[in-house]
Each structure stands twice: as structure tokens, then as C-alpha cells.
Length: 306
Image (cartoon, rainbow, N blue to C red; front, side, top):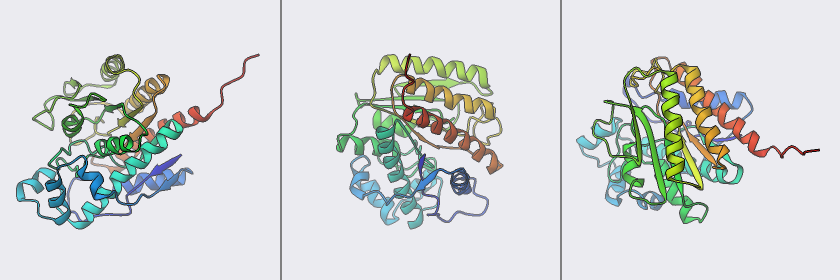
């Protein structure tokens, strides 16, 4: 499977910052060791960003003129390296989505930047890769109807803001209640789960939500999966109690339901904040395996009947 990566373009962080920058390099090294092709995109064009985000906001991000509040809400210190990396990562999601439409499944080793809204970066998310990729696919005439299945532990407020009014998009977000962001922007379907929810209850709620989404929004051209590692029981910011096995089953459930309905699936990593970065990488590696199996199944010729 071809995977898109941006980890070689790094950026400065203060000592002890909780953003798990190392996970992107580690998951890329894991994927390469298992024979997956890893590709690196060019930075996305500025006009592709201003087609989705407010132009004045993009200019402030480009020029480093964010005010103190904007930088605090982003949660990362501004630097030219941060912006360059965000542009490369956003283009990676565009490229993975193109692969997905050709092959049935695809993945970027990053992305899922679902807190970025029209005129602000929030929660470690500079630009909203899924919304930008959606616009790019439409501009190129490759797809129109897009389903977003966001199973990061935090609600996808930026994606809801950008795609919520769009009749050709449907946003499903499954998250922990009373967790960041504390002011919600409603998705088309939000599933709020109580703190401590474990594997069985989570998977049952997710299965029901997928049924609702597919009934409400039939025949999408493409689905984006935001497969956050942060519902994990050991996550510092998650507050849910899924095991690694439960998270593998989560990904298999989403990808299996979507592929059974004939919907191509483009996966992104989204969040993950376990104190031990190896736990985060284990969870993301499971997502890669699930998507790779879906890609293999999509490429396999049908069995002949005798």
C-alpha cells in the first residue's frame, strides 16, 4: 500500500510539550519496515487553502502574524516550519484521497486535523485537511458526495463548521462527552459517549451510528475515516476506556461497513496522546493493517463459480 507522509518536515516545540511529534516518524518507519511504499507530497498551494479557509486567516498563518489568543488556541508555537509541514500534510490527504478513488482505499500517515475552522486554527490543527481535500476532489471532478466518519475522541468542530452546511457532505463524529472542544459545533450526527465507555458499548454505539449515517446519506463517493488513537484507555486526553483490541475492532467495523456498501475509504491518523508514544504507534499501526487488508480485498478478482 502507498502511504503519504510528512514526518521529515519537523518543527520546534518547547521541552515537555505534549504534542506527540515523534509518532509520525515512528509509524512511517514501522510501515516501511513492513514493505509499504511511503510517498512525500509537495506543499499544497496557498489558493487551495483560501478556497476553504478565510484568506485573511491564511495570510496571518503564512506571515506569522497570529495574535497571542490565536496561537494559544492553536496550542502550538508558530514557526515557518510548522506552516510548511501543515501544507505538506494537507496535500498528503489530498493525494491519499486520490489514491482511494482509484483503488478503493488509501491512507495518509497524518491528517485528521478536524479542529481547524474557517478562520482559526485550534487544538493542534493548522488547516482542515479533510475539508480542503473535499474541495480539491470536487474541483477536479473526481467526487462530490463525501462522508466523514470521525472516531477521534474529540468532536470534529472545525469539520462540522466547514462541511455542516454542505448538502453533499455528511459529518459523523463519535466522541467523549464533556471533553474538548467544550463548545460544540454540531455535526450532522454527533454521538456523545460517557467517560469510561469501554469496547463493547463503544462498538455498539458506533455500529448504530454508521447505520444512521448510511441511511441518511446514501451512496457517498468517498468516506474519510479519522481514526484517532485517543479513545485508548491509556490516553492522557481521551477519557474513554477502549483497549487496543477494541480500537482495532473499531477500525475494522468502520472500514468493513463502508467497503461492504461500496464506499472507498481514505484513512487519516488524527489524535493520540498516550504518555508512551509506542502505544500510540501500536494503535495507528493497527489502522494501517486494517486499511491495507481492505485495499487487498478491493484488488482481489472475484472468485469464479463452477
